[in-house]
Structure formats: C-alpha cells, structure tokens
Length: 251
Image (tube, rainbow, N blue to C red; front, side):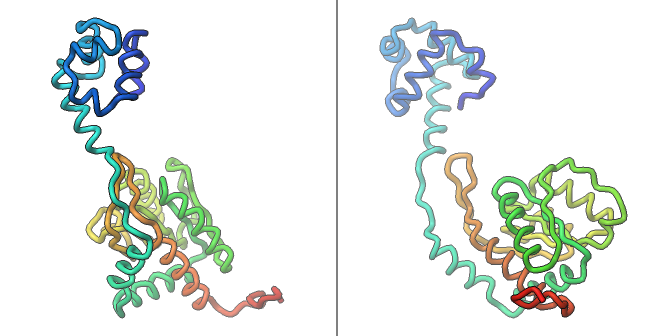
C-alpha cells in the first residue's frame, strides 16, 4: 500500500498520518476525512495532500484502496501438512508418474554433474538438493546468482534441476535457457504442468499442490518438492555404476 519511495517523501505531518493509519487500520477504513484529521491533529487539506502523495486523487479513493489492501492481507486458513501430503500422493502415486521419476533419475545418473537453479523458497530447496545429491555421490552445485556466466564445455553433459512453483520465474527461465543452449539436460519440478519452465524441460515433475497466499506472499507448500528431490536422488544413486566407495565404511 505504501511504497518505500512514497514513505521517503513524507513530511513530519505525513508520518503522523501514516503512523495513525498503520495503528488503526480498520477504524481508518470507515472514517471521514475530518474525523481522521481530528484524530491526528492535522487539517483536512493535510490529509488530502497525504492521499495524493500515496497515489490517490482524494480521500475516498484512499479508503477504497485501503479496504482492498486490508482484504488482501486478511489472515486466511492454511491447509494442514497432513492434508497436503495426502493430496499429493493421491494425485501422483501412479505408474506413469513413477516412470517419469525413473526416467529423470536415469538422465541424472548419466550426467557428469548436476546443477540446481531456483529463487526464493525454491532456491533454498535447490541448495538442499545439491547437498543431498552430492551426499549420494553425484557432484552437484547450486547456482544462486541468476546472472552467473554460463560458458565452457563442462556444461555439455550436465543435468540441470530447476525448481519453481509457478514455472514462470524470469531469472530461472533465463538460466535454464542458457543451460539448454549449452546442451544441458533440463529436469524441472513445478506446481503445474502448463507453464513455461515445464514446456522447455526435457523432463518435468509436477506436484499439483493447492496454491496458498497470505497477502502478496506465496506460501504454497514445498513438502512435495522435498519428497521429489530425495526420491530422485535415491533412484539416481541406485542407477549409478558400482563404485568401490559405496559401502558404509567408505571402502
């Protein structure tokens, strides 16, 4: 509702109005301009100037935008973790889905190394995935910088695991495009099948979780992603050629 650029231009009186609005959000939504002015000990024209500084023509428009903002940020019911996992397994535990996991794992097993990409919560899980795959004897790294230069022959036989809830994150898509140009095999994990990332991938695993938001923040569960990463890693490990150091003792 209030951008950092707008707040930076506030006068002392503007800050007083802003402070009152933030501390009395629901009362302000139904006040008249004179009532707000009296509550903050300023004049109605000062309130009107405040409204214009935050992109509103007048107090009526300010109240309309404020009510919409309150509605968007209203606390919503969150789906339980048990329900999320039950829904995920009901949708995905099929022969076709199992075959898709095995095919993607086989492609990873044949690659020289694995590169993970993702941003936000997907980036955090991408970093976890790189650590987990490396622990299962497939060297993996997470590239956090979306502008990381991608050149060289060492990208030719790599598997790229791209994580994105929407499948439309611009930075992730740009990274994947560059890896695809270098001959990398793209495995994506997204929340829906019909998205740009899935369309440009060689293999796609979709988890179909119910999208959840609190205000402007995406809080869609990532539990299925953790499952898919570990499932892929273990299936990949099973497909790796026998190695002398695969035993528990490292011999």
